Amino acid sequence: MKATQWIASLIMVLVTSIASANQYQYEGVFAQSGDSQLFQGLNLQGVNKVTLQASDQFDGPDLRLDQLTIQFSNAAPLLARDFKLVDGHRYLALVEDAWVFNRLLVEIDANSLNQHNQLMVRVMVVDVSSRLSDLRQAFGPELVHVNAMLRDVTPKVLADSASLVVEGKNLTLQLFDRLGSHDPLSMEPPVPGFEQGFSLTANWQGKGVKTFFLPAPAGPDNFRDFTAVALLIESIEAPHGTDHFVRIKFKDPTGFTQESQPVFLNQAIMQLYPQL
Picture (tube, rainbow, N blue to C red):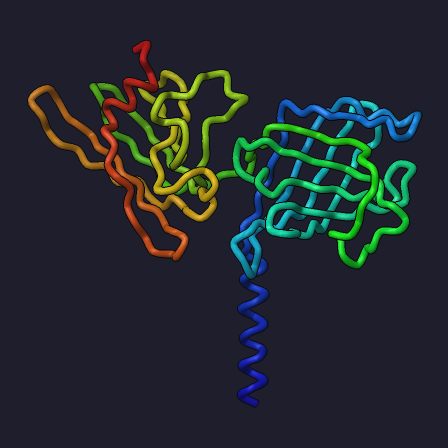
């Protein structure tokens, strides 16, 4: 009886862990395709949209690539699911009955799945002699390749907010749970020193919302291992006014809570709003 209860408890833990795995959404911007013109009448030149869905691996640090969708300008979309990580550096998936082909092999460079990295996708027609039981043994001529800049569009959750007065003007700060980098599609240039890390927005005296980033303890490749929890603001009275310093409370990969190094908020706001 005790063994049965132990197994049931273990199953519940496994199910809960899988259900709570982080989900990630990406899109490829500035996408370009190279059509080998392997089949006359199939035009794969030009890409309208590239999207990817990924999630945390239950048993390892690597991402599980769940789905890739490529929408071509002059052909039906290509949808690939259930990618397998092979040799630690590439994802492979089989696609059945796509366009006029029985099987296609889709290959993605695993290093692509980092924010603002160059996404590289190859699509090959599977040769009839390939061993499909081991995707590493599948081969065939290249049909098309697609390159794009990868953009993380995973929704961010508000972790904390604060209101204070900086340089005589009301300031509202919002902190989001996921770390990130300056959006390459943004109309505003990145602020030097605040291009990546903990993700915040500022609204200073109603002069518009600005997105900026505070330094993080790791680079973009490891951003998903950290979660921002709270804003910590320290205000110090000085002869010229009040100096404000901001730190971020965050959870590290082990689940422990830490605090980032303090940043002089007054100076950061002046850089965000240089025209005021």
